[in-house]
Length: 384
Ligand SMILES: [Fe+2]
Image (cartoon, rainbow, N blue to C red; front, side, top):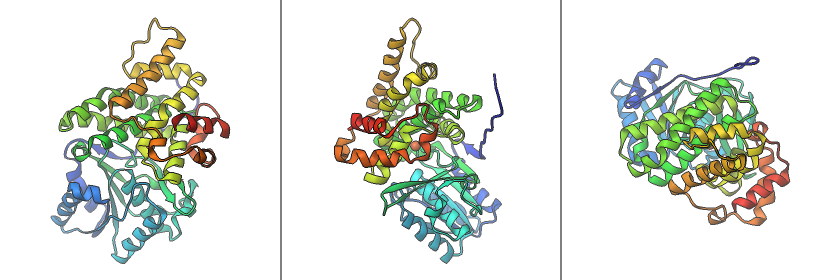
């Protein structure tokens, strides 16, 4: 039953083995003469950028590679990338890698067409002029930056992540090839897989959820829960990699419409303030935030538990709650993630500042329960 009006945006994407080989076709479609390929050293080492450059060269399109991109990409890297784009007279941008190169590619596109500093575009719909054509090729499953309207850029002076949310940021095409994820190490597979699971869970319990988003979120939860540990056990299995990639895409479509919640608000704060990896932060925080949110919308969390494969019939309400939270915890540990925030260098003395920054994050607006700063401080303390 659909009450009221709901919008659902699904950008153009191609998913399946061989999607990467379509890059030249799409670059030509967008009129490319010279592309800027935005990537990072790890992805270059894995050989994916070479494959792209070679495919482009074969049809007479030249390329330059910009790879000064670190995890939690910085505003300075975006600004230098935009300068590089102009100095090489590029006309199309290709972002290839995990969330960091793709977010940096989005930022370069914004700056190159609007001619202002990237941090001036913070907020919702603040990008006036769309960037040049943008092709995204994700190599993780994943951040879903390849389909999302977000670019997350770190302001390293203020030690905070800046969220840019705009239709103008959505890539023109996502080429989603599960083969590109086969070069990830097991821990990166685990962290990016849990990130995708968190996208789906936060979208499903978001106050902005609706029916079409729910379908994608639940399917994502089912696919990721079923396949994540199997992929880690059999990293060369193309079918399993494909299932996980599909789960990540479904999660991306869900959160691109329903937004996220407190896990991401807090993970963004950790990423900006302490430069910690995004997926791992989400994995550490998830069970604590789910426990905090659970009683606000228990029926939604029950559906999440069922999508994870739990048999909940016959249990008491308390028993269902315990089983669902335990399953999230079990999956994370089974995937190989057992760190705490303390293990990653966070201290009690950081909690106040981390919480203050999380309270200002866009993602908090759609969390099912409205926290105050003290609530967020308690959640950080639990995760230390
Ligand atoms: Fe995420």
